Amino acid sequence: MSDDGQHTGHERVPSRQRRRFPGISSRAYEHPADRSALVALRKLSGFDTVFKALSGLLPERSLRLLFLSDSVRVSERQFQHLHDMLLDACHILDLEKVPPMYVNQDPQPNAMCIGLDEPIIVVTTGLVELLDEEEMRAVVGHEVGHALSGHSVYRTILLFLTSLALKVAWIPLGNFAIMAIITALREWFRKSELSADRAGLLVGQDVQASMRGLMKIAGGNHLHEMNVDAFLEQAEEYDAAGDLRDSVLKILNVLPRSHPFAAVRAAELKKWSESRDFQRIMDGHYARRDEDRDTSVSDSFRESAAAYASDVKSSKDPLMKLVSDLAGGAGDLGGRVRRGFDGFKSAPPTAQEGPTDEE
Image (tube, rainbow, N blue to C red; front, side, top):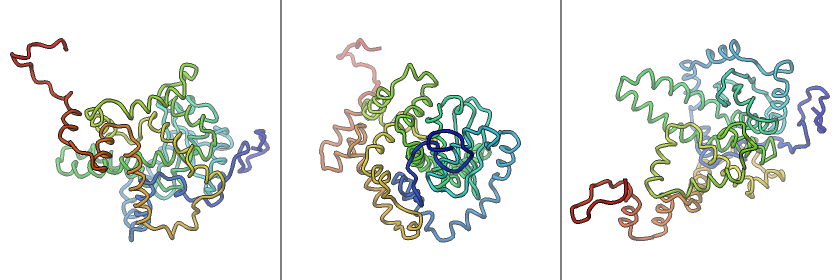
C-alpha cells in the first residue's frame, strides 16, 4: 500500500506516513521488568540448548498443524487488510521474517504470538469484528512486538505448563511446583504485555486508537457509549481505591491472569506515550539490535529496580504508599496496618457496645 492509502501492490511499506525504525532492538520499548528478565535469559550459558531439548516435549508442531487445518491463514488472498497490516508492522519494526498469521473462529476477542522455533500470530474473529482498522493495526503491531522480543517462546511454555498443571493436579507436590513456575511466568508475561502495547503504539503511531482498542476489549463495541478520558479515570480510581484490604484483593485478582487489566494497560501506555523515552524513539534515538550482545545484565536489573521503585513511589495504592513510606522512614507501622485492615474485623458487638446499624 502506498502512503496515500491506495493499493498499488503489496510492497512492504506503511499504508500511511509513519516513522520506521531500522534495526530497532526490542530493548527500546520493553518494560524494564520484562527487559531485565529477557537480557538475563539471553546471557545464560546453555539457555538455547535447554529450550531446544524442552521443545521436543512441547506440542508446537501439533499447534501449527491445528491452526493450519482449522483456521484461516492471512495472505494476499485471505484477510488481505490484515495481511497488509502485518507487512506494515514488520516493515516499521524492521522484522525481516514475517510471521505466519491466522484468524481463528472464536467470539472471545483475543490474540497471541506463540512458537519456539518460529513465531506464529493468531487473532480471533471476535477481535477482528470488534476493532476498526487503526485499532487492529495496534494489535498486529503488539503481536509483532512479541515476536521481535522473543516472547513467543515463553508464551508457548506457559501454555504448555498450564495444560500440564491440569493433568497432574492430583499430585500435590508436582502440581505445587508447576504452579510456582506458572505464577512466576505469569508475572513476567503481564509485564511483557505492557512491552508489546508499546510496540503496538510504535507501529500504529496513534495513541487514541490504542486507547480505544483497550477500551473496547473491556467494554465491547459500543464506542458511542464510552469515553477514553473516563476510562483512564477508572484506572486512576482503581490505583487509589480503598485501603489495604483492596490492595490485597487486587493482588489476588491479578495472580491467575496472564494479562494486566485493560484499564491499567491503557493508563500505562498513555503514561509511556507522554514520556521522554517514547519521544526519543520517535526522533530516531533508540537501542539497536547490533548492540544487544553488549547489553549488561546488571545494568538491566538496576533499570528494572529503579522502575519498580518509581512505580511504588508514584502509586496511589494504599499498600504501595505504605511501602513507600516505610522506605522513607515513616513510623507507626503497627497503627498504619491496623487501620488499613480494620474492615476485615467482623467480631460481634459487646454488651456494652450494643448493636450497630450496619448489616
